[in-house]
Image (cartoon, rainbow, N blue to C red):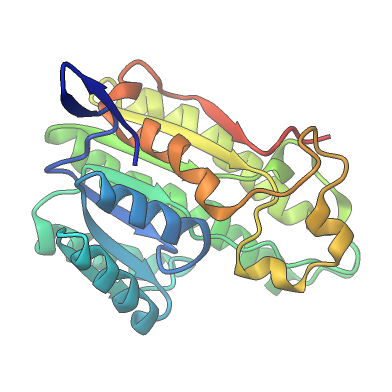
Amino acid sequence: MTFDILDGMNIDYFDLTGKVALVTGGSRGLGYQMVKAFAAHGADLFITSRKLEACDKAAAEVRALGRKAATHACNVANWHELEGLVDAAYAAFGKVDILVNNAGSSPLAPSSLETSEQLFDRIVSLNFKAPFRLMSLVGSRMAKGDGGSIINISSAGALRPRPQIAPYAGAKAALNALTEAFAFEYGPKVRVNTISPGRFLTDVSKAWPEEHKANPTAALRRSGQPEEIVTAALYLASSKSSFTTGSLVRVDGGIA
């Protein structure tokens, strides 16, 4: 929790009371950490991922914190599923104040030459097309209503591309560009920002070699713990970032 005490009162600088957050990929990893943090600061949650059971488990934790939660199974890489996802969120809560485009994947390819069209299209659909469509669907409604905050989860790979993740790095770099474009399209009522994470020890890191986990070339000489993403997310979701839009916030331990 991020509170200060002023004149004997607890002040929550990231108060999200009355807000509704839609988080893609919200049942695991960094998305799950953001879901819990938003709920702890007063938001209600609409949680989506491909696995409904995992979403429902995360929703139960949100409700245990005294907040409302709803879930929806969706593969956001499928364009045709996204309008139904957004309609379900608005049916559940009547609004979306915070959209977090967190769902993503970075499968390795043996080489660029050996990257299949199917793999390329899957990476681009999940990491670029899905956020584009969701920002269009939700951002347009936010702009017509009371406004809101959109947070895109990019990657340090977009800033430091490497050969085995070339399509992923390209898709995330394109997402960085979209952030600024949508900030202008839906401003001034909608703020659109990007968080650029480095290596985090989420469940996917279990398959990493130990040297990769250690992250020795980073300025902090380590990988991040999943909960270390939440302060940046809370800042961008809350009114405390009211003059921040079109920005990229690096949470990467100092990438090399």
